[in-house]
Amino acid sequence: MLILMKLASTQDRNFNDLIVTDEMFTNRALVEVSSDEEGFHGSWFAATLVKSLRKGKFLIEYKCLSTEDGSELLREEVDNMHIRPHPRENVVDHFKQLDEVDALFNEGWWVGVISKVLTGSRYIVYFRETCEELEFQHSELRLHQDWIDGKWVIPSRVWPYLILTTLFDIYQLLCFSVLWKFL
Image (cartoon, rainbow, N blue to C red; front, top):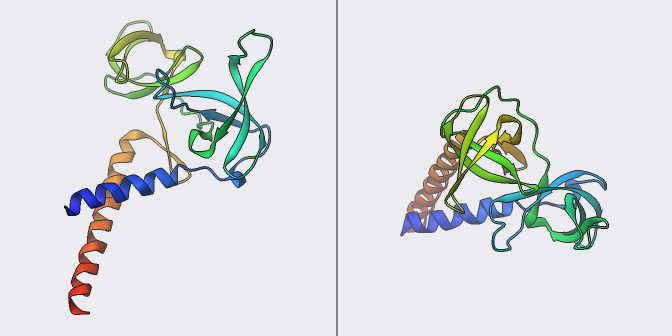
């Protein structure tokens, strides 16, 4: 029971950490936008912040997605849970098998894992969301990063962070329950 309560608490905190405030961005800032639409889970699309609307809402213009008639770049209102700053660039000479990466595919960045390293700076990337593998050039990949607590974190560093915060929260719960018995 304690672990289930803690997991819910961790999920809530991490969810709130991802919420973007109006103060984080200026107009014309380069951002990335995600979608909850089926078929788009795990993808991020480059956009420019046009302006902050009401609290927690932004008008963005995609860099590579056009309107249906193709006459102009698509503009859309997004909420603060679906927007993040553009990730910092991490130069990687070569990727290793099982590295978590973002692959540029269908105008967006999709999270995947290097399943095979090929010759000529080519890689096979496995996508968990669709259970498929596709081949990419090195230039079409970037090291995956997560936006946590207002910072970019490389995935290998995410798990130690979550474990430490989980242990700290369990310690606090235990201390509180012991104190509660004496009240």
